[in-house]
Length: 123
Image 1 (tube, helix red, strand yellow):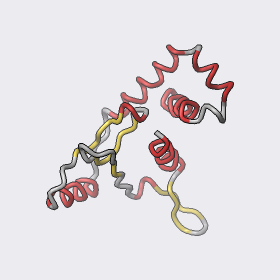
Image 2 (cartoon, rainbow, N blue to C red):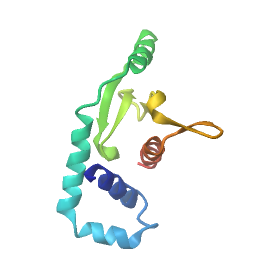
Image 3 (tube, one colour):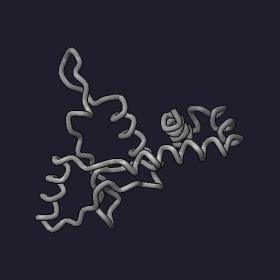
């Protein structure tokens, strides 16, 4: 649950005006916040690129675009982006089937995928 707590902390840090009391509480729980961030970062150590992601990276590199895979963005809360273009503030997420759920009207991005997108865009 520490990873989810870290994501909640990120939300509070990115939007303190929405949750001013939470921001004040977090300030007094620095050790817990640090522990949860460390757990979130440890999760990034085990990420493996998919074949689809490798294909996208290979295509970009064949066009002369430098690409790094599975880069941890420490300044953006510790999220990992599938592809990072060095020297640019740009990450590319290669969202395969595991990032979607089926609803009555088709497929939609999962809650985890939507949260990651929102937090990366706000950072």
